[in-house]
Amino acid sequence: MSKRTIVAMPGDGIGKVVLDETIKVLNAAGFEADYIEGDIGWEFWKSEGNPLPQRTIDLLAEHKIALFGAITSKPKDEAFDELSPELKDKGLVYSSPIVGLRQHFGLDICARPTKSYTGNPLNFIRRGADGGIEEPIVDAVIFRQNTEGLYGGVEWSNPNEQVYDTFMSHPKFKQNFGDVPKEEISISTRIFSKNATERILRASFEHAKEYGYPSVTLCEKPNVIRETSGMMYKMALKMQAADYPNIDLWNTNIDAQMMWLTKNPENYGVIVAGNMFGDIISDGFAGLIGGLGFACSAQMSSEGIAVFEPTHGSAPKYADYNTSIVNPIAMVESACMMLDYIDEKEISTKIRKAVADVISDGNVRTYDMMKMTGRPDVIEKGAASTIDMADAIIAKL
Ligand code: NAI
Ligand code: MG
Image (cartoon, rainbow, N blue to C red; front, side, top):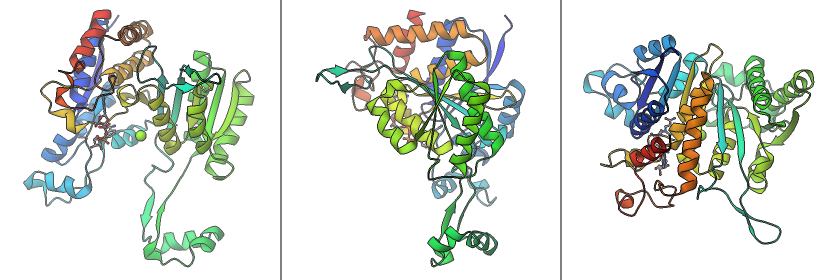
């Protein structure tokens, strides 16, 4: 087997420790790779005025596959204050490097699996009809369109005349906002393109087909958001009829889905949605399986570029602890998604089994799994450190 090259982008805060520990797990599992570190994050904003240096973009363009920890983003004014003095007069404006990566490489498909592990004390439970406690098995994968929609960045406050006049030509705008002074109007658009919508729908159906899920649930709101959600629903119907007759297409509204996810999460498998609804629904499902310590993701382009990352951020308040307390499982799981993507399923299966065994044994649990408040003394109180957890996974391997 030839050695892979993986771009490893630790980023800020806890990103570094979870990525380091994950690479230890990958090595122990027999995955042979060279890791080249990619610079990204706050440090590079402060020192270079660019949190996503061109050299990192070049690295990813060359090697295509990356593991990413997490970055810190701060509001505009704070970002400016922290900029190195000699860069302050250059008119630089901070923008999130992970959003920058998504846009630069067109990482338009985001997959966020949420699968409960047996024995995880954070698993969702509910009361059954007989009054007893039920613990439904959650196994849902959310496919989120990652580049368009409400996060597409096409927005205005106090729009210019041309934009304002265009909006005024729409009867609903005129009726609902025609009396509002232009200066008091903010507009954020929700734009869907057919090509990107087709790609996220296709990815979800293909995933259902490959992994044997009986249904794909489109989670939007086509009865109200008629143009964007409506287009997506029509395209999903057509795609299902033409290419996936053995997979059911379910259509749920985002609001109702948020209610159903705690009533009957076990009924859902593959879920597909636009950018913001996918963001919301994936956090909702992540909460059922343990939250940020367990939530992993993959972001993929049509050109074979893929970035795998936990959905949590840099958790700055824990970043400087002498002994890191955060749970590395979300990052380890993200690395397993990478292994699946590059067809190293034997190794990913091995790692997932090791993680499952550590969780079901219950001897090694990070503070979140012990339902503690994150503080340095959680270790004295019996919580495992980040390194303890990685070591326990390695011992199982
Ligand atoms: P966060 O995800 O960093 O942390 C929220 C809380 O979740 C933490 O205080 C901690 O209690 C818990 N947590 C996070 N990761 C954990 C883990 N692995 N194990 C156990 N507990 C964990 O979100 P927050 O505090 O809103 O943002 C902090 C910084 O991270 C901000 O600068 C934000 O912009 C950035 N961020 C970056 C993301 C990325 O790199 N993709 C995503 C989300 C936030
Ligand atoms: Mg989110």
